[in-house]
Image: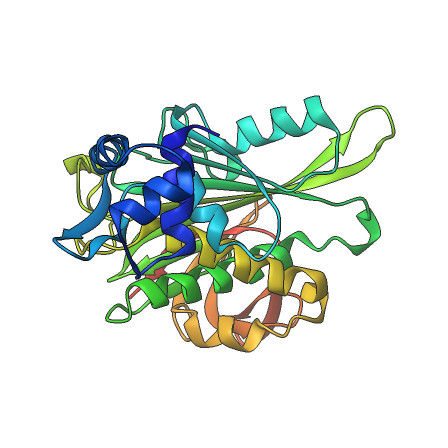
Length: 318
């Protein structure tokens, strides 16, 4: 571990405490001058460190994504792969999983995606610095107990709850099946994919991708009608990432029980609205009556109750 990372680790372990230069120098077996240089290097990376005469240094946090800070808040062990720029976190996560086959949990995070993609192969707008683009790789071998619809609805609830912790003043709504909205604009896309082991012909992992538009930087005019952002308020991005991962890990072992469906129904902004749903085979128009225990969309189509297992809401009449 580099000295700078070692110092950061010490700060993480004593978050909120004042640590004197002497204390740090003794702990790391280096000079106080060296401590001062390392602290300046950490500050250049966006770490906020208070300093006071006679009290020393206190670590506040970092608004930039930082793997060490994320890892220190996770309840389970993940290998974290952090990239400034990447084509797509899901593509990269699948590639790493295919190469390693070691059954590890992994978290791929990027500040920018050049080829971010959503459902049905569409692109997902992912500019630098104004969002979080992450994919979790969770080992999974049991095809019989996979329900993609429930897994996606569960992830949407987990992400919305984590966002609410960082932005208590905002209202987050889910649009079936995998989008989260603020002020009628999409701010989060979720993409869950099953990865197969080609040799054994059985599942090896689930990859759960989450793309979040946090702030308003750089959204092109032609996209502003559809794509939004949450707020320009500064938040602790690392805490948000760890809240999402911890929330997912808590729900995933028993997600088939669908205990989160009630929360999903409350957060759904489609209830009672007239919508058009594209099922790839046809487009169905109806009024949304709710979500069932399997995460399916329930529609009233000309007085007849209809269940949609898979599809996409392409039009909402507000």
